[in-house]
Image (cartoon, rainbow, N blue to C red; front, side, top):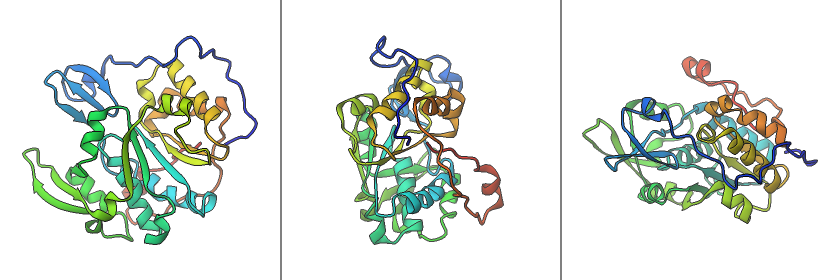
Length: 275
């Protein structure tokens, strides 16, 4: 993170919080009629929460993250995960840590502070359970240095052909779920006053262009120097990367390439961006 701050040209005082786009999502996520946008889930008119997050989305990230931590935060750092949904991403982060670090060293980077602005989503996350599709279960095998059974206990298969898993006690201790709004938390100082790593991925698409610019500015203004913001592949299309750079962030430079035992993974996951 660049120490000398660059003021954005946009005036952010017009709207305290950004608008949220809610049109057209039905065509992307099943055929349900959207009633309300909430965190990383959608509430349909039948009242059910449709969660479209998944385990190890952008798998390479969870391997490259540990290489970044080794070089930039060898003594540990606070990690936040916003829009954590029902827990798929924070679990992915922790599994990546255990794959690369000793159990004792993982303690320097945990517990992950996982926040979502929807209390119903957090309530589900605090049940410490995951429903996984077969491709998600297969992805677990790409971690070469851990046994997933040490962290997830398989339960029954439900009517949707999803396998239910419970967290083990070791995994439970590594993630702290709580409600949180990224805009309010930045403005009220609810993030670390020290450098931190902030996941805020695959949610920028739900903000207006003004919202993207405001969040980028708030991140740069409120986070401590040397903090790292990690965004998702989908966020690039909403210009999150360009807004972060305009706000004052710089791309992380360095070689964080990972050798995969699976050539298909190597072809799929590349050119991830960190700020």
